[in-house]
Image 1 (cartoon, each protein chain N blue to C red):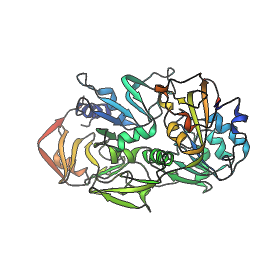
Image 2: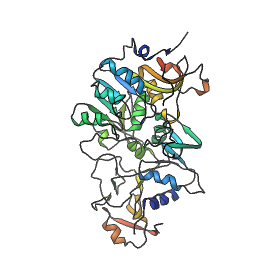
Image 3: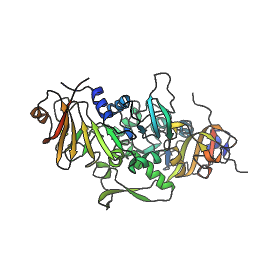
Image 4: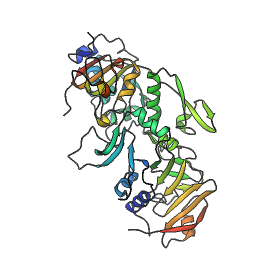
Length: 220
Length: 224
């Protein structure tokens, strides 16, 4: 059994404390915004200059002055604010954003992350990824699958692709497990029901230890 | 009487010595929001060469920045994300080695421009430490953490898109179309602005870019 992207997003959203300021990366991390628990309020930041980002708006009713980092038409919630790029990244670099949630090609047991560039003919594009991983108080990575299409682990001992940041990731959420990155290495805090610890280890590129209260993850 | 309003694009770019071959040009915008595209279109026919353009993206299609690149005016792009679904013109030239690219983390680019406008020649940031984008740059430890030295950016011309402007050059913006525009307005020796609407006076508490940073502006109407 594996978790769906929606299951992962829901688990991530449940782990965010009320009152947090959160930046969601383009792609799967955006899904987290759809699962904010009703008993909590957190404020979503978008790098292009808004706090209080609300849901995407239906196709055809976009206001193209009001977009997110993925250039989708979105909305702004009561209490929100607009600001320019230097202020937006001052919030990030200055440690005012509580959690940055991003996707990744590779995450390493030492907290390194590679998520911006695969060497090749296309021009290298970084956007705000390096600022977010270096500046946010906590960096969480979401992986829609624990391994790549060809079965290679995405959670590895050392990254092989160009790094986005060094020693910055605190936690990884995948379709198989929730793993904390600690000074002592990878600690599994929850894993999908029915999966053997040896099976999870076999799909992970660095040694795992298991928290004493390691929990079960259930698919919806 | 101070009046930074001009009647049309021709008047905006006339007698502007900073619009020259080899100029460094700041172009605001993020995605399609807040890009002074009408201004770039007005500059294309000048046939300038060896421009360095500082822009979050590489332009889309063959309009605005895409056209400026296509017409061979740009020799270097400083950008955070020079890739989009329709950035083919830039990508083809890049693949052919015919245009130089400096990829900069987005917050570092914003801060380099802010610093340039505020008279700060360089600063340290933890962003990009230990990555390809810090290669060759000076690093220094402060309070146990490693930082990379980045240089401020000062430009010849800033091309800004704003929502409203008054005759003193005070500006406001619209939602996330603000983005890089206010910082870029501060960092060029000549700041040219396309404004959707001229207004009599922006209330002082609501001014986002004070007129000191603005040289000339033209009204372009609401976007369709």
